[in-house]
Length: 336
Image 1 (cartoon, rainbow, N blue to C red):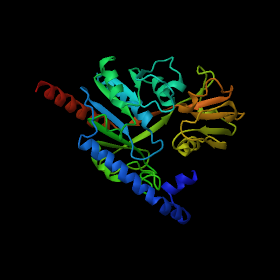
Image 2 (cartoon, helix red, strand yellow):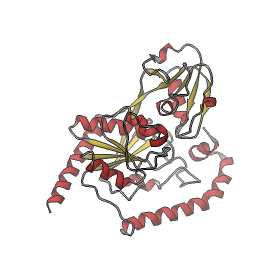
Image 3 (cartoon, helix red, strand yellow):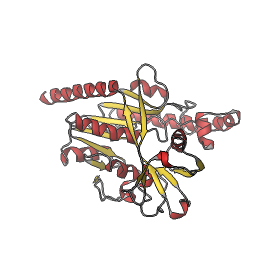
Image 4 (cartoon, helix red, strand yellow):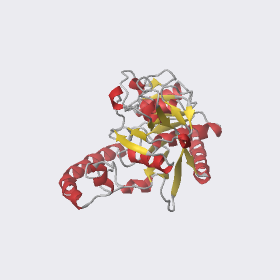
């Protein structure tokens, strides 16, 4: 873990002087975020209603908690249930100049972002990136005729009204020191968890009102030649693990849990733009999110480990039941 991660999630005595120095900035963050929420609540800043149900998948803390695998799982599950979902993403890391933008199989990662490309490879439904969420949501409804929208990482984007809120949280780290940024990892206080519809834990142990999500690893896929695969059990020599995600340690721990021998662990900041010099020689294993940025610069012995989300039948049943009720309510309100 980095020094900041340690300060946020397992602070020692030498972290507290820094935490105390940062508390005034956290207080300022609280004032500004509270004022922003109040402006939306008083409708001074407008919130846009969409004619179809909006499901927001987000978190209250910074860093990767497993939102993308959950969004992919939800998109597939809703299609199985007979819906025509659309996925809305911020497109973080992309540099497109025209929004909203539909993401297809030839979209470039530097234009739409790594997470959008990753989701595009796994879901068979419309996917739109737009930093202005209401505009992107309308694109999904009006152009793609979606009947439900899954908003990736939009919990604090109150300009788009939502019908169902799902928070994904690291089941081991949870809320850390429970302080707001920058003294702690929280975007909103832990009180926010009491107001969401579903709290999903990525690993760890659940209590009443929480739902467990586990990530299941597949076969290793060659980054340069994606038609080549390899069982993770066939790795005999130590490898280099590389990750540029919100919580790289989770990826390294997953490899160690799979009995992979690691000779080196290389961490980069989330959404890091890779270059050839970042990739060492020898066998390298990276995340799928990172692999989409390395297809043109990877050498022959670079592999990525795909993961998929598994959720409980209880979660899926209650989500579909809640969604059915939302659809009925919207139809009823439309008749009035």
